[in-house]
Image (cartoon, rainbow, N blue to C red; front, side, top):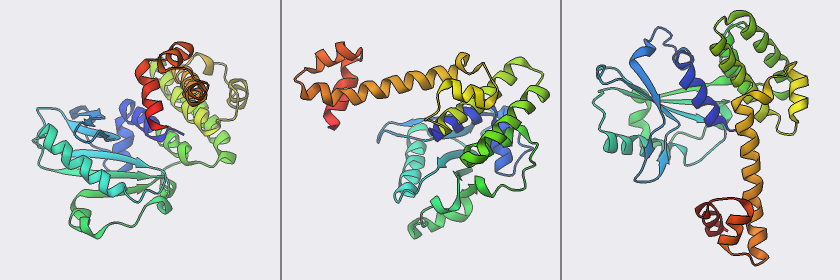
Length: 260
């Protein structure tokens, strides 16, 4: 699953979910914009930042990282990215927090003692599989839970969420977005299932029309093309010829060749 992209879309469209996760449901979401800034000096990209609008400089910055696997260098990259962000963007906000969202506690690495001075005032860690106090009938938090749900329970939960979305969301656009999020998670959670199988599973016939499905399908085509590059290279084709044969940009082909 492309977890970072899924959570970026969830927080972008429904920022109140983020503030509910961190225990601040009364936060005025209208004073924030959600962005994914690139840190150019090192080509780092933060998963997301809730940055207050210009007229709310006294409000806190929230740096968000979603981590679903154990990474021994995670905290080094995290704090490097944050401090490079400060250098590059010079935000006026006096307070900041690093919000780490794990699927489960076991994927967290041992916290480095060299960053212990940052732990208490700035770091907040949340584990999605431990959010048991969230009501089962809460639609938007249910979407978050679907990401970490086991495959044998995901189908039932997805169906429940789809029914709730249809019943509770009267705004057509909002309902469509929520259904797309649910479908996105299911598409990546069950990569071996065909479109027809997923439609049958969820009792839906709109998956093929949604933006997320089309993007997932196109992404699959691109991955297949990229996997072909080393094979065509061994057969003696030039970068230009590979580019034309696979209908890819020359730079895309060159980048893959350099990594071989």
